[in-house]
Image (cartoon, rainbow, N blue to C red):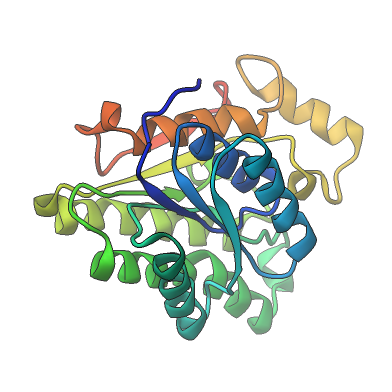
Length: 248
């Protein structure tokens, strides 16, 4: 997928220093968008994404911000607008995992995952609603695990369920302005984050669970996100698209 369907557009991709976020940032840039590569800690990786985008002749900048903090989100949007003049597209990819039995989850851990996965999406969507021009695009990244029943996923799935509900209601709230709001829910995807704490046997088990018989790749998810932010998807809003190779 390549072309200039996003020429003249400006996109913020949160959590874009690696994995799915990095793939989304590079895909949007190839379609002509100027891209803000947001990160929290991984400055070197974020700058590497920017360099790859620039090497291909496109525009990008790395901006540090913790999306779970209102002041950081305000600065993220202010700096993005200072750099590129506006924000047409927001992709909420930033998120953290937590895979523990409910009896073992501490209050601190629960507060942390809520702050990033739920509050972060709320704060960035709030800023987008304030400054995004009409006919903008918001894509929130959830997870296919919201459709399953899995031990150790209760906190993570709860946060992603909240994201899916925010998407539906925001789609109605912002629809009169032509702004579409959708959710993309990946299945098991072969990223550095997904691989943490998993053996090769675990990965093979997840692969067998998919109808297509493999783990997803970041580009599989990025292709769908890219479609949703183009004019080709202008009549799609309030939807949750599970991009998972038939995992569920």
